[in-house]
Length: 291
Length: 323
Image (cartoon, rainbow over all chains, first blue to last red; front, side, top):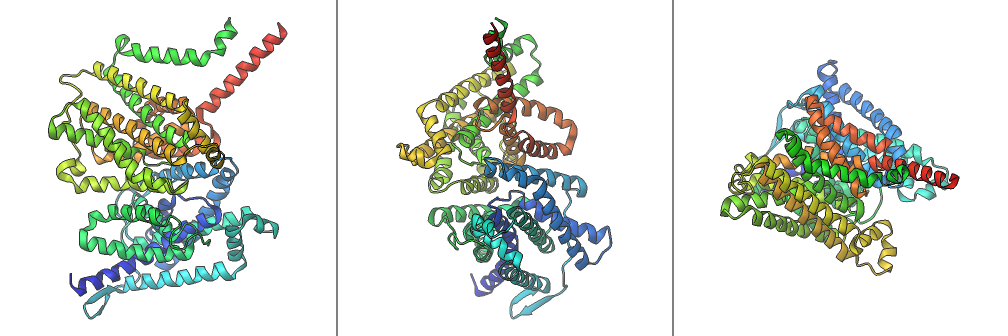
């Protein structure tokens, strides 16, 4: 294997890693704050992409306004979903189990409704920038560079939100110690609702970015979701920083596996990595740290 | 007399139901309905096994369709490649499923709990289709395996019906026995209060491995019967639909209740045939059904049956007092 291929692989690994990072963040926020594992994660991401596509082609809005409108939509969709269904379920005795099955059922319902509404054909969201950049033998699309940039900026904004704003701090307080947060007067239900809505928005955004890089069908969400699961477990459930590191590791590992073994071995490799993590370090890279 | 009979209405119902199933082919014997019944026998066993793992042992496994598919594929491949008797192959398929699941899910699961096991088993089942397409020469890839020999030459639908009915009865008896044995009690104790059960001397590792081995063996054997009945199998068995059907069966009947999974299987298998009228909306309806059950009837059908039971008991007590 020559150096050219390896560097190209690393670059493509970084690009997919950045997309996985933002996708895993949506999952991590929900688990970190509410301790619910979102099994409807995939379809939420796909819906974000489909909303953008809808606004772009049917309403004739520009790319940026469509994305912003889709994000607003996703936020309120998440809020509604939480208030109407997850919140009552959290009060039942075995909520851990019922929320998982509920979100699974909800994911399948939404997936098939999306299939009815948009059809099974592949949809694309146009790239942000055309053309490509060539440094030596490495050729990268401007679009992919912009994706890495967008993800990094997004992670910084999210970090600022979580660390510096009142809502972000309240969210972290709930994640770290629910009773303590309640004592100092934080409304748990309200924080849960906004955390869920925000995570839905982040997930929707990841779907939009994935839709620009790859393609969208209503079913693709499952693949994204399972990848997101492995990433959050590698990073340590509920840890945002861990999830970001894990996403880049898995992005590069996937690119290397594709290079050396072929794309069909990618799934078994993901499973093997997953089992290895669970056997060696079930608490993940960040090891039990919260949001 | 009437009241006394009513108190045993559940037993009467079970006996009537089993008699109906046993006599149906002789009385009416429509081949299509018999086919649906055979699917019901198989799915009821799969759902009951899953219920044993998830409801009784409290282990969040989401990969049971994978265990089923391993048994089915192993049996089909052995039978086609070596021409062994299907009966031996079914047993070997069950053992293959047991070995794979215990090795890749059961052993890692010893150190894990809750959500991690759910993710592990889901991803285990999810990576099977790619392995199947990778090993096209043996497993037939995306096209699947075809012309798998039936249980014996010239088998009729009627014979398959009774063979699968026997499978159904034997499997359910094994599951029922397990639930009501000390092993089953240990599962329930671990599910309800892990530390208390361990303090009482329940060996958590041993029980966990036992339940994984038993469930995957039984599910794998059922997979073998399924594949020799239908004659072909493809990776679509591992798609979302069978998974969803099995989950819906357990939820419908009530998780953690032995009769629940069987009741759920009756309703979902027969209901699914009607849902075919809905065409492409079928999966959406199933998803909506699961959501609705969890939101509005968390106990499933068994909750309803318990409610009737309670009413009848109260009625009986009131009669006893007044007389």
